[in-house]
Amino acid sequence: MINISVNPVAFTIGSHEIRWYGIIVAIAVAVVILWTITQVDKRKATLPVPPDIMTAPVGIISGIIGAKLLHVLERLDYYLQHPAQIFSGGGLAIYGAVLGATLGIWIYIKLSRRHLKDQHFGFYIDLVTPGIILAQAIGRVGCTINGCCYGKPAPDWLPWSVVYTNPNSYAPLNIPLHPVQIYEIIFCLIGFGILLKLRKRLEPMEGALFLVYLILYSAWRFAVGYLRTDLQFVLGLSQSQIISLVVLGVAIFLLVRMKRRFKAEAQKTGSGEDASPPATLPTD
Image 1 (cartoon, rainbow, N blue to C red):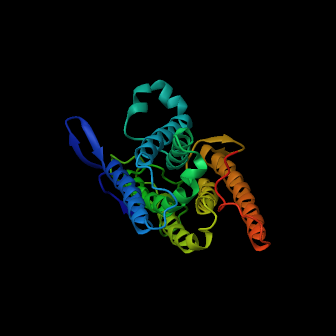
Image 2 (image 1 turned 60 degrees about the vertical axis):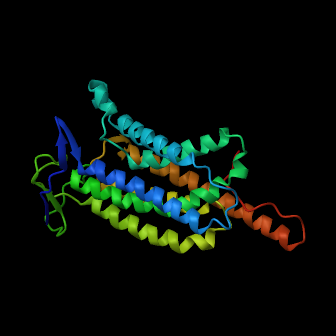
Image 3 (image 1 turned 90 degrees about the vertical axis):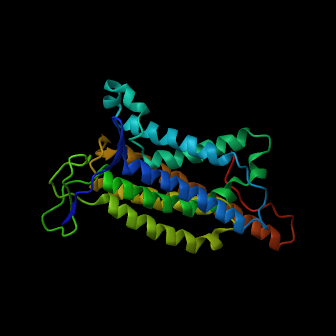
């Protein structure tokens, strides 16, 4: 049994609390940015097109909006009674952050002057992908300290259950819980290693690495949902589990279609016909 007595509040400014969660999430965002800058710098001699510096702020803003929106929708009854809390710094859903940032950047590129295909969206999203899951591992450290996203009560025989004792924690106090935040930290670090291992192999198919990430994380979130206390919506499934099933199905479909297109293009190249450019994320 692990006792977590750390005060989730790092310090206060007047009556406003600054929690470790917010500080660590900010660090996680910085990690994604630094990872992207480093990878672009390493690949600058072979970049298909120069990176658009506006995608970073667009991704951060749309990610925050998506993270907050998904959290609000999951707890809509509470926020209807406390609408001012919608604009608070707490309550961010990782799933919403990833999907919101991806959609925001895609829309920005689609509406920019150059065509999406010329921007190589798939190439750049693959470049960022390992940094995303690494940042998620860091973000879950904040969740662990904060006591949010906590697990269900653990059985007596589980030796690694966690017990929160600090009154500022969001988790129920003095009850052994499944350490689902720590489970996810471990999963994300393993996923980070897997993505690093696969990125060279999948490099010819732009966007494939990101789809693999979505498949891995969606399968994980669906499974770990049974150990979390999320509100149930349909058939005993939580909102995140339902989203996971949708994302999992779409990502598998897109990856299979991408692989078939890539094989067809490779066969054309082998037969001496004009080959299309490397496969990118479908735009239709």
